Structure formats: structure tokens, C-alpha cells
Length: 211
Image (tube, rainbow, N blue to C red; front, side, top):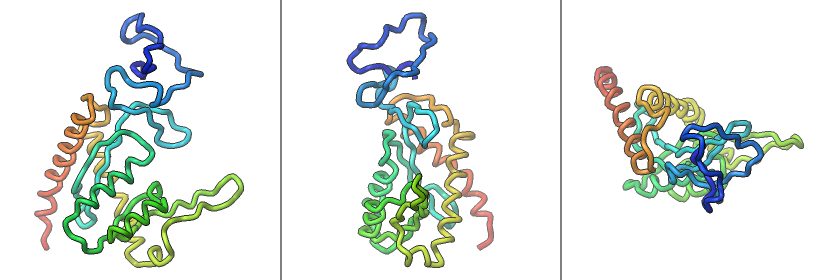
């Protein structure tokens, strides 16, 4: 975070050593006005309300439900729409046009995204975001009742949580809890290699299970 400095060079000079103390309280910092001097590709991002903002990338993965294997991965700049954009880009690369389902958490409960899935012949098994506003009004969901009533919907909602096993392994065992490279291309390579390692570890267990 100490490397996140004004783009116009108006920040204080880095005196006191490279690990000097610095107080950012009250200072307005954004991706439009600041950038990291050590990793310009990183973006300031806050995962949720009440959490601190951090310089980071966003890593995305799609898991197939039957065996829990990661089938593709991507690293993007950290933005509020990067997750949904990455998914749509993957779906556009599909060779088959047959209908499939896509499970996702409530962050994907957005009308434009759900409509984009339907246009791509994908049934949106997206978790319903029923956030209650301060006025006591429940947020309107983009998931229609027909989709939510389908027997496959609760199954997708249960299985989709296994994606956290993949990310947990990638962070703890795969060593990406603290990224050791700089630049989005190197970060993407490290993440995809970690996903491949996860699948390779899972495959012997799957092959050993009788059909």
C-alpha cells in the first residue's frame, strides 16, 4: 500500500527507507488518481462493506459440478464487474451451443448478467440476493420463479460452494495467499498453474473410484 502514490508525482518523497511508517488516514486515494509504483497493474479494491481496501488482482475460476475440477481460470484487474465479464467471455468461447446451467453466488444476481446468460443458452442458477434495505424493502432478484423452482436449482446452490475448496487450496497449499510475482500476466500464469496442480492432485482419487 505504501507504493500506491499519486500519478502526478505529487506525493511525499520516499524518505526514511523503503519500509518507512506512513499514515494514510484522511487521504483520498483511488485508482483514477493513484497507482502502485511497484506493480501498476494492481488495483485498489474492497471486497465488501466494512473491509479494508487492498491492492490486488481478481482471480476467477469455473468448476464442473460432477467431480469438482477447475476447468478454466483467469486473472483480471480488480473491478466491480470483472467477475461477470470473465464468465461471459468464457461462455462466448464455448464450442457447443447446448443448454447448460451455471451456479453462482449472489454477487451475480444482476439483471444484465442473468439476461446475458439466457442469451447464451445458459440457465442462471444464481443465488438470490435478498438484501434488505434500510427502509425494509427487499432487493428485487433477477432470478425468475421458474428457475428457482426447478429441482436442479437447489442442487446447484449446494454444489457451487465447493469452488471455495479450490480457492482455499490455491491460497494455502498453492502458495497464492501472498502473491510473489508482479504484473497481471505473471499473476495469471501462477494462478492457472495452481489450478492445474489442484486438478492433478484430485484426478488419482477420482480415477480410483469405481464407476
